[in-house]
Length: 536
View 1 (cartoon, rainbow, N blue to C red):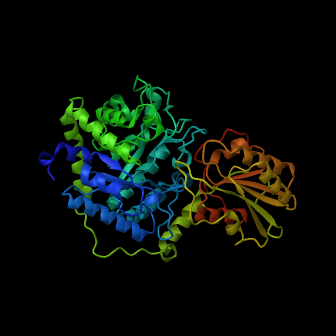
View 2 (view 1 turned 45 degrees about the vertical axis):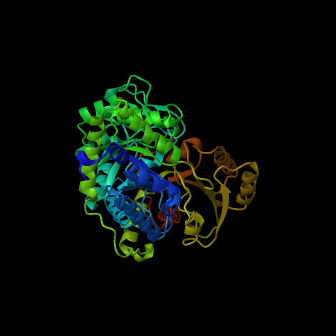
View 3 (view 1 turned 135 degrees about the vertical axis):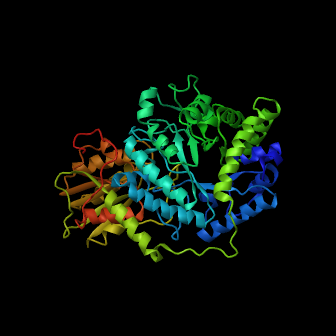
């Protein structure tokens, strides 16, 4: 399709990526494609069954666009790895998350696992991944980035991020580096409110911007904006997504980025609550965004489309601005999607156990990632004595975390190494009754492993109290192992032994069990700093 032959509605449609709520094309997504010439789709768990279903869904959506005479769709997803994975199925590899990869200290692992991820996403018709996170997580109270970052060292984040981008795009999958100019040093979740990064420009260039500069050098296809305020760049109190100083002045002009700029979802409260969906879409385009993301609600999606259209018709946005954005979109679609063909037969997907080469690599990465932070004579566990494992159950999903449908608890994994393992399951936010129940059981064990899980910024109070009560019992062996947030130790500094896993996925529970049993050494290097005495 040639830009000169496109209607205004077709051009604006190409500037949107939207989501819907079913496993097959529903009325919402059909309307957006057929009436609004939608440029792209984003998948969430609500759209995911097995890989065969996803491949069929992708093919159906592409056919809807083709039948309209429109360009192929971007089909995007947040498949970051670790605890942020929209596709959860035994036929898809469970790629480690960024902080797990950062803990290995080896960007080659980031490259190799990202090649696997890209191949599998392309098999199911997904051609854009909203990854990697290039946020430098140097704020232990960050409630939304955390383990989604490779760590707190900007150079290491840049190296790992560049490796992921290279792997994705060599395979033909567009990478979308996020969240520009950096969401790592915030203590507000932009899903829920407006965050601010107060640092001066020199500091931003040395830390927050460094991974994005490296990504631009590497030719990253897409950069996603942050709904975060940067006073050093934008004097008005508006987030980067809506700031011309950030998107055009800094990203386009100063950093010479000529790829696609996509917004984070405008339904997040940082935009929707403070600016509104329609006005947010207009301001984002005025600021320099090429593509607007509206993930969930049809009325919001239509409001955003219509607001941009009216802004052009009224002269608030020039059609030249629209044409420049669409020209970049057409160029990338021509590069990545020109040879897109719907297969005559659905692709064949192998289960994980049928991919031994992948299995070996992911086991190796997990073993290189598990990190021993502190040990006051607690490791390894004694093989002849019973062990109690306390496992926190993630029962509700957040904007970021979603419970895995298939999982291996640490107790399951440890039972493969030790004969006498008992596991007790508690909520990730245990109340007093649950704490008393655990303490009563733990009193009969000389060896206890407390697994912690923090989805937000701080270890839940119930888990902290449970740890303190266990320490009062004076067990022969007491070990805490975080399975997401490495900063948990800051809340329980007196625990005699502490390990980090960065995720509770099966490969990592197996690796942790091997370390606890003395079968392997913990080889990971802590990618963030802990403030408590005794952390290394």
